Length: 473
Image (cartoon, rainbow, N blue to C red; front, top):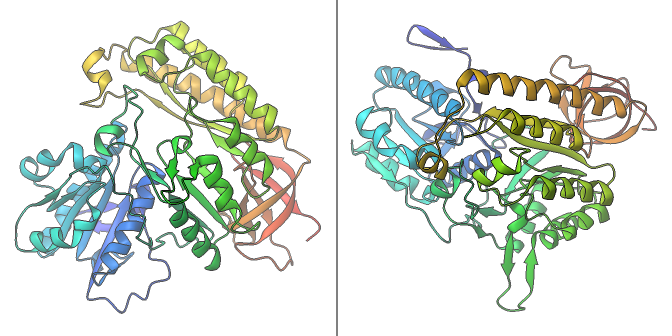
């Protein structure tokens, strides 16, 4: 717990407060503390920021009170994270009153969208840095130290940070993120990403492979390739004229080592190809798991969302995935109560969920984001109580699907990558299957360690977790 003023804050419930990984925290004259909210892209960006600051002699710290600079990496996709960030910034300002030299900065999507409000009107921050401007952080920090309001939210058509080696702030030491592209060309009507992260651009594939190799050499056993829409990754070698698609990139990373697991996020239903699916099926170390956001099961709503596929197209993709990768794990994103959604539309979403048999879903009710196409074109006309009721029905269905999915795995045997101790007991390991399912099993007297693979048989389960035992180790 932190005590800020007279109010206690439970940091674990505010966002992800990073702990420095593989850093000697006694070598720095200044320290920064960072919290990240929202998607995996933000977590990856925080590691790029850490590298930039580290090169300037500013080290990461997990101790808020040691920090000379507090950074909050933000998300504007939904209203709730924005509200949480505002609350957090207010608490940090209380700390600044007791430590006047402390600087507070905001990074990411919220920085771009609310720069004037946060800096001039509410005076919650000293510097604001957009997703494409992290290289200018040292200059902006110097400006803020002189009392100037430091801002850079310019978007880029070229920035990928490919030459920056991220500092891994996640002390897990087993799984790492690799950003393969930035921005998004899909203009989904509910989404702010094209306006806050700019147009799509892909990173040099050889730098991606080099980063994966470096992680593996340092003991990491799993990488997740990140992009707003990884399936549209494209890079052309000007020398060999070779065209690198996402399927080819994924294969290149998989060939780093058969002991390095490869995951990716996120796919767009209109772009995921058979080549991607066959590549997953071909390599044992490419995880049999796909996150395929549906958002709505109604073609009418999907058209208003500008998702550029129909209900039938999506279900066809689900069929194709299950045909090529029969044991593939599936998850999704679902929005309830989008503009104009009828009860019939809502029921169509339920039926898509049941058909797809998702192992997991990220479920939200619609919150209008200023500046989006939906905010300009459509009325947010679904009452909040209706949105919440529909969302609860979606949640109830997903809970049942998750339990049924785990029950289908009872008695099955999986190769599990051990990520660390279980949350409840140091006598148990927690790991994940290729299908991204969590499994807990006793350590016993076996000589296993974090980062090892274990062969585990599933004995029991609930909706979120499977319980098993090690065999043949």
